[in-house]
Image (cartoon, rainbow, N blue to C red; front, side, top):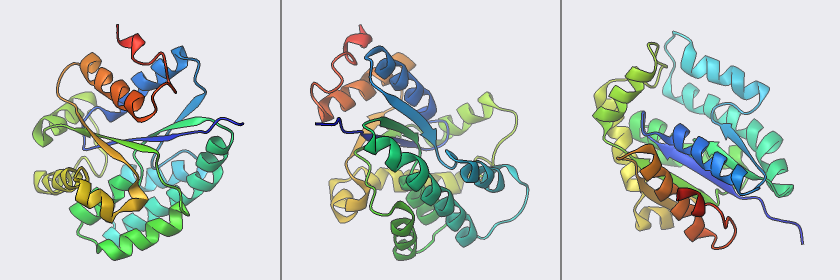
Length: 226
């Protein structure tokens, strides 16, 4: 029987460390000999790279609906051109952001109607459900300060005010609720990961969450913690 590829998504607010933790999990999977690839949203395809530039790097005003639909366009292309082929080939995918970010930033932060965003996302994902989402939780103010330290230039999302990012954080917090997850089956299982602490400590929590989800599938992940 062919091996099954898993889609593991890293989510969280600005400066939560998700990109770092994705990299560390990728290194652990590589040591375990597990075939995988790393992608990010928006991005992952030629179209997605252009959409990322339009969404995050250009200095212009953008209506929240236009913003949301550009994210969806990038997502639709990546699902069809990258995610489904990789998973069908038995390759695991580590994805830096997916549609839970759209729910947090465009619904929670921008205030777009949930029914509209979920319908557009259903069109973009075409039924693809993450096998596991690791939701990194980190204080908003500290995360924004960390993001400011890592780069002198900030993208459009990072430049939003504290009130916006507080709304995003409250949305992410709601996503960790079992009741919310039952009402949103398209999101798949979500595990909240405390992201305060050293990179090594957080990486251990991430690896334990993955190992608990699929016992024996990644046998060397926890061992790499030693």
